[in-house]
Length: 358
Image 1 (cartoon, rainbow, N blue to C red):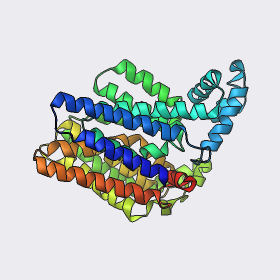
Image 2: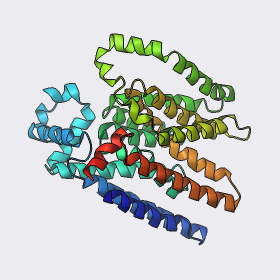
Image 3: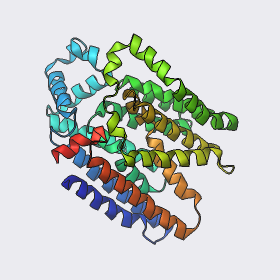
Image 4: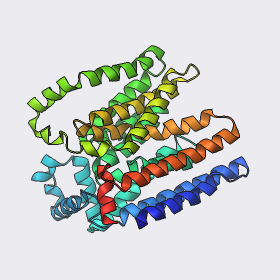
């Protein structure tokens, strides 16, 4: 558990930067410096890990070494193009041409992933500390130790959404296409664009929770069709149902659902708050479906960045200084407790391999 103790120490150091009582400009500069320091160290922890840390780390190592041996002209022949997305193959080949060392590949990948999420946080909220705690605690960070291709797609798409929000549509198209070349499941993020475009339609936004309940009701029928025509997905059935049954996970889901519904149906909520609430409900919906068909749990990761915005928004709407401080301490305590409990048990599949190594 030494690695997690180090992470905790780093987080609390940054906390002092986040709550410094100084001039506004200076405070922002200090918080940005703390955020940069935190994500630099998180990238080092991820990039310098051993090959046994993470379920897929060794597999990626074998793939990287195989790609490195293949001439660039032949890179799309053989098993590479059939089993891996083209973007990842080219990415691995490019890094191997710079330095043919798998540890270097891990380090570059870690820095890229952490930079993209740091940028997402910077452009999404001023509550850098709470955002960083959530980034680490809910599994976004640790998932990248295992399913890196998909998590890089998640990181890219979180930045694509920032561009979509700011109406930089050319960048949105390019980044989304790039994400698809790393993991084909990234197409699901189209839902985010559609719902964001409809955020001003109050009736539609308020119907989303009801639609998700209806979808859940008919999911068993849909699941039968999926497994009937796509039999190779049968191995995703009931693989780790017990992993999601721990009380800590259920408590987190309850809190997220409650806050999401609060923002969606709160009369004073603006269109953006209702949008964020809808996205976090999608995250919970995918995880609940994942109890039966666990591939949906992975699909839910595309909506996980909005958990960061959800909790930061909660802090923003509270004006009373003392209540805000209590909320700050409460959120940090709850998420760090959740992080400790989830990483010390087998309830979180993407964390277990890291704790085994430690």
